[in-house]
Amino acid sequence: MKTKSTNKKVLIKGLKYMGFALLLMFIGPSLLYLILSNDDKPFYTILLILSILICLSAIVITFYGIKTIIDSLFK
Image (cartoon, rainbow, N blue to C red; front, side, top):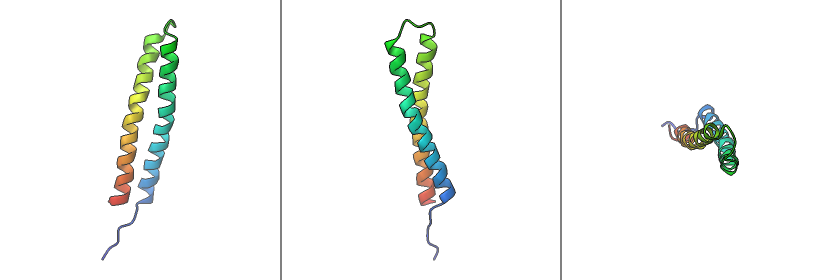
């Protein structure tokens, strides 16, 4: 009978994704707040789109990191 064990390489990869997502979770909303409080700047729309994309990518990377961690535990 084979026992299940955690794939440590995949677990570390998932934790790296989660760390990067955490970084983006702080950068995205901070940049969004900064942009929305200064709407008279010349690059307003470009920076607004960029900050929204950073926030969305933080969400996507978080889900991908959770999926990777779950795969390392149960596969």
